[in-house]
Amino acid sequence: MSMAPDDKVNLLAHIVPRFGTGDAEQEAALQAFVAGLLPTFSVIRSKCPTLPEADIQLVGTELLAAEILQPGRSTKKEFATWLAALTDAEINEIVERRKSFKVEAMTEMKSMQEMRKAEQERIEALREKMKEQQKKAREERTMMFNPSTGKFEEIKK
Image (tube, rainbow, N blue to C red; front, side, top):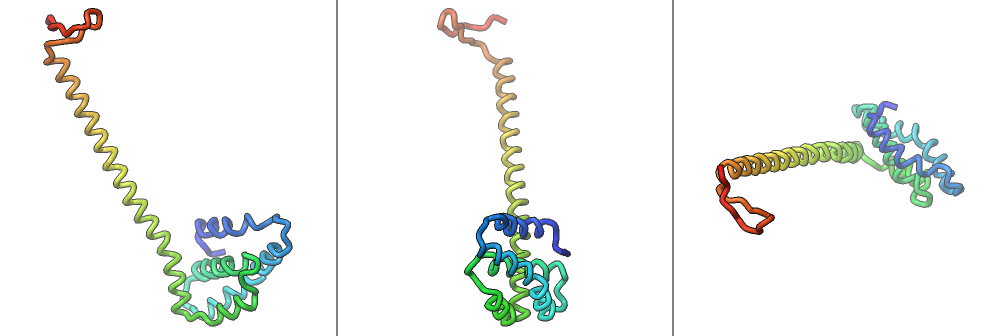
């Protein structure tokens, strides 16, 4: 497949849990999914000839998985009819929406990393300030608490 590795992993996360359920309907849905891959790619390829192969496979597998892998959701015929009714603009919109998730996630991750870095810098600056205050207090203090007497006493330097 031409899909990006992270898209393949995402697809596998949807498919793998459906294996070995012992449910006859689920097994039929898996068979329908596998049988529908190449025809789905062909329909999308014919509607969007300029779409890269990776995008064709991505949108095809995701549409097919969403409709066919859940038993009782759509039949092969219903899916094929729906897919045939999609326009190239609708398919491109689905691809762009799917890709936008990754872009948004990366943007949010960068923002979160910047916030985390700023917070770490703030905490480190606060620690440094506290260390400086402790150092200054040790140098300038004239009184000290004596635990044996329970009183503050003047430090003899």
